[in-house]
Every structure is written in C-alpha cells, then in structure tokens.
Image (cartoon, rainbow, N blue to C red):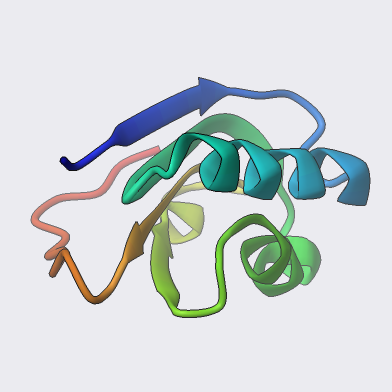
Length: 89
C-alpha cells in the first residue's frame, strides 16, 4: 500500500526539524512526502533535502520561483517517477 504525506512545517532550516521530518517518513512508511511553507534558503536547500528524505529518494522544490523554497516534494524513486509540469511561488 502506498502512503503519501504532507506537512505544513515552519522552521525547516533547523536541523532538528529536518530530522523530525525524516522520522515521520520512516515511522509512517511514506512513499511520497511534501513539506510546505518551508522557507528554506538556497544555501540550506541541498543539506535540508539530504537530512529530510531517505538516501534513495529524489526531491524537487520551487526555489526557482521565488526567494525561498516554499514547497519540497520527496519520493521513493523505486516507486514513483515525478515530472514537474508547472511551478510557481
């Protein structure tokens, strides 16, 4: 069974929050997870993705549409293939 989650989270620049996201993914056995209202800055983006999502997952974000990444979507790449059709702030 596929499990999909989303979390409106503040303070995702904080490593403790990043670890909490990863823990929620693991505990709930999510296959796809979005985090919204993240406000992650460019300098923290890759490290945040690396800490939030399991190693074999892929992720996309909407940083290119505004001053910060407000949405980050991660997924198990062995299950999903994600194609971004449109992106906005």
